[in-house]
Image: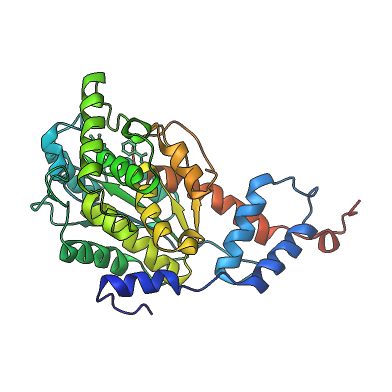
Length: 337
Ligand SMILES: Cc1cc2ncn([C@H]3O[C@H](COP(=O)(O)O)[C@@H](O)[C@H]3O)c2cc1C
Ligand SMILES: O=C(O)c1cccnc1
């Protein structure tokens, strides 16, 4: 069971004191992988994925039976600056679509055999425009982290966190600039597909926001000043999964920006995560590099909602099915060469 998350400092502690993966299980997974009926390394990165998964599940014959997809939604005050190709109302409209089963993530979660939960965070109370002040108060941040923290099913055996929040690629770009430096144009992309002029404005907005909050150096303070409620809730859920040793498949640019805030708090905070895909948002590749993650898929998706990660779940399921279901050379009577 997870302890209640009462303060920001208890969240920090949960990240820094989270359990390590099971070393014995890892060694057993490696040994088993070496005996399976295939040439060594022939399943490529599926082998690494299965060993990683088994080490977090504490067994050399893991199974994926209870995946969970959680979609968090939030509204962003910075949309008033004209940073998205779509109006802010779309956030709430898409939440209705998720609840009716009509969005891309509904189809992909269903295909992956995942339970899907939707959490809309105070849509009638957008975060503040971060070029004018901090996006959230400390109470807002804690409340959003707690929503994410409490949303994770302790019995899930793999987790995908997705988001919906018009304007949130602006927020994610600002978080990346604040965490990693460089220039605003390095981190700012087209999101829902803004025009060249709007991209210039969006880049300016990202630069302004980060300048305004230059004093924010810590991962959670950067999240508070530049993030959004759904971004913070994703961070809370990824943190809860870390505490529960539930492996997480990361989604696109926004999901990885949320995750990056946790990595800034504690080095090992993302050890239980794998990159599901590289999105078409220009800076996602650079962000994955900063996180030291190689994506499973690269399909030019730029949707969010957890869609790329839910699709990558199929690949992880394939990896785990082979690892746990295949026979060894000895069992199958195949010559080991
Ligand atoms: C209909 C629709 C469905 C979506 N589902 C995810 N997003 C994605 O687009 C938004 C981020 O892009 P930006 O920063 O440019 O607003 C997020 O809500 C993200 O999840 C969508 C966007 C739209 C329009
Ligand atoms: O990378 C993503 O997840 C993404 C990119 C564009 C728009 N929404 C999400």
